[in-house]
Image (cartoon, rainbow, N blue to C red):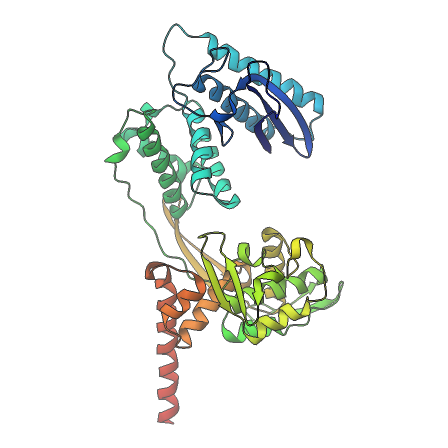
Length: 441
């Protein structure tokens, strides 16, 4: 869904600009005014600014922003319950309903209104998203958290978040939503961030979140990466033609057959993943590499996650992949073919299965408050980010100092590198044991 608010270019007789809304749901678009106008100097990030500002019709900043939030919330709920594409007429009708609800709310002026938590949450997303320059994936995480909070209590208020209420919410996330403990912890961190923001704004007077101590049982998951042998096998793997039946073996040695589909996409996925593994790039950065970013033996990239400007040395393998696509034309001057992250993850699992990366890996975690163990063949756990992890693990185990690797990867401290350093130390220890065994022969 996309609900965007903007000002008309031409002002009205009061020298104010009418606020327009653009609503796009399932590719169906409807644009209209919302019945309010504001001074352009008091409009920023789709909201009215200025604590004491009122427009020509004596409507305050808070009143107008509440109408905007009401429209956003209404269409978010509307889309969530929608099964088929809406018509333009239906979107028009829904906007009328949303505006009608906003007017009804504004008519109740005799008693002070209690702040609506979810309206404030929408403001929080707009403000913090703009200030912190959140990526799309981060916004999706916040949207998911909001859905969990609405599922818990769609009429929840700030008063709920005392010790008892916070304990109940955490129990709900564990027992009802059946989230893993790490995910519960992330959701609680989101709540804490939002409530502290609301306290600073003066929206929330309940400050219990500042002293509440939550306990989470977090078990570190194994770092999924490819070994040197696996990476080179994948890099040199010739993807069979569509319809080819390939005989494979599971981790118990039993034979089965897999039919190849989407061979062209599998080949591109192989190249894109290997490019990440040879350069340390995240998917989000690899998908934006332009030919103009490549100067000589270096790739200069500003990372999407941290906004760091990094020079990355291009090795022979990365250069070969770039050379392969040199004559092809891609949109916006991109240097590589782009496949969506979700699709690439799916293709990558198929590729790794074809390469028989089926070592059993056990994931231990707490789910719904209980310890759980799940075992998967390795290919089911490989995602696009495993390319970056592969680069880091191989670089460290090869003896390249962590501070050098961090210059390539953009890591700012050792905390994020610690899991990889542990893997490198373990790899070195195993290599020394093999060395000792050979000496004793």
